[in-house]
Length: 139
Ligand SMILES: [Zn+2]
Image 1 (cartoon, rainbow, N blue to C red):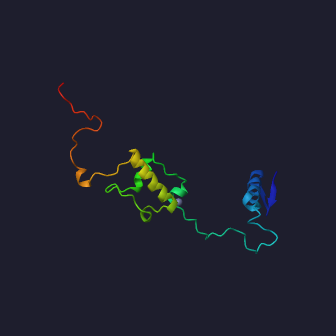
Image 2: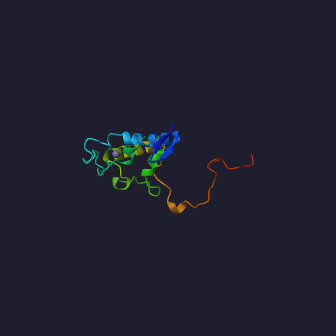
Image 3: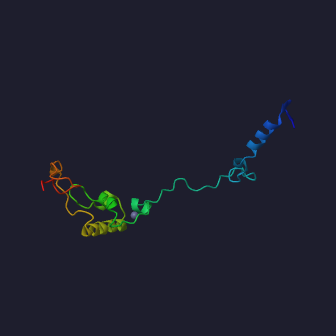
């Protein structure tokens, strides 16, 4: 099959390509091609609406747990052992209270330390290997 357009012959494949491009889904979408009143504004949601502010734990839907010490230790100072306040962590009030409660629970359970080593002692030589606490002896 061949169509004559402005004196030139279009082969069947070119006709199919042209027809497919003009009848694609973008042209069929009623949202963008409103034939009855083309000059009217398009109905769309407000692009300037601000995203709802959420803390990181609410956004990722994380519930603080006393067994998850890797998460909880991020809210504790590594130098002083102090639990950071809300102005540092940026958590909402409910999650901050839950984090503090779980940190204290983890400390009572022995999963987290109460006190941290003073940073000036961090460079001290090891007296024994933590992997093999018994020192080698003759007998
Ligand atoms: Zn929150």
